[in-house]
Image (cartoon, rainbow, N blue to C red):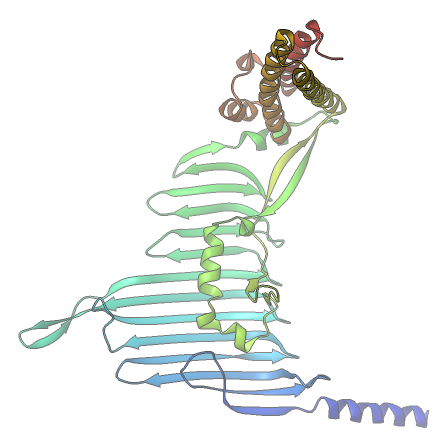
Length: 417
């Protein structure tokens, strides 16, 4: 027992020595010409890399005849990762005019929280940019009224780098956005965009239920169909996606350009954010936050539906094979009128099947026959008697009838060998 105790003590001493804490207090590289200083504690890992551990303070200041600049960042590291509260403050004020004769002032603040390097908890952000001119009046320069260039406030709530609870973007010069999410980052409530009008979507656990502008509410028929499905053979897939992955998502644009703006957060030089990752191939930085999840409802086909669709696809393939065979015959006998007529009938049938396949695509995508009818008529053309059809199966039978008609015509002319 005595020897075991001595071994443990010896190991503890060696481990403590390997984790020896050092202090840094001096000039800090920030990628710009303005001198910065920082103070922090760190230890070195087995590869002799600095691992920040403890409080961190960064400061950069400059004042000359051109401008006044101040930038400070403070927070805490734990084993190289940001933890607890971090504050960012950035301000600058021009003393010289730009090429258009304006003076600018910028003020940015961010209060954030981390857990083991992940954004966690409530973040509040504000960014204000104003500009003005100086006009000579009676021998003296007088400031014009301030013109607002930017005035944005953003409130986010995180759970381990996932957006949860509520998200509010208040842009006094742009679009105001609010989103309600549950604890899993799924939109659950209202997502609203307010500019001149209020445009909104309402969700229940990620499924869109209503949409509208101001008080003009449109109920989502897909959601009604989803709630009313009684046939046990009919089921629905809930396909999960994120608004953050959509090109041009305005919420993503705000978060990337404001919250994770490198000029204010210096994440490339300070580090410790697990939500920021460098792509070694492109040398670009990616933001890996998640949330704003929604569901698209997609029907699971019954056995009968699947069989009908397989038969339609099979008929389409038979016609393609007939086209290939006819083309071979035309190559051998280019002046044969029968082969030329066969070719015309087959080409016509294939064009009809383009529409059939288009109808099938939307049939497989939507639960509600009204949505299938509206979208397919806009994208695929007309379907006989579509206005009279009341059920999805009736609609599919009409698509099958359109396909069967072409097959019967070709069979009558002995097109299938």
